[in-house]
Length: 155
Image 1 (cartoon, rainbow, N blue to C red):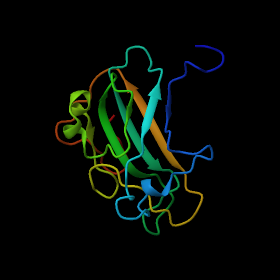
Image 2: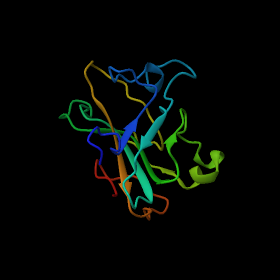
Image 3: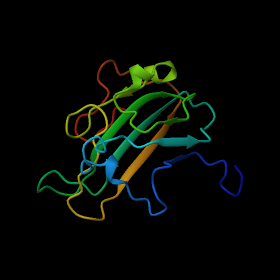
Image 4: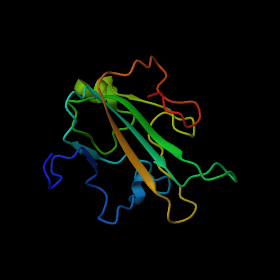
């Protein structure tokens, strides 16, 4: 790996400012057609041997009603082929319609028990939304169920 980090496996979004704040149209607080749009994502320098990728997006400062602070899952995406270099803005729910390499991508249920992206509704400032991308050496055998039981991911 280069000492300047240029070959580091990384996930970025061209839509986020240097402050790293999630723009309003990607949240549940946007308006009309500018609400709950999945953000554009790009990744670089996949580890050798990567066959598929999986993405989990969580509010790591979330809570369920008055419960303790625990991660709140907003998006689960699995079986992203290594040939795909990113997900375009508004991708959620459109894998089949986009076709090609995108057709094999599966979206799972979020913590609202809905399939696909559901942007956060942040009750207080300071919530951190974590985007984690996993490089996998095989395709996940998930059948029709992609997501999880509670906050336990199937991978």
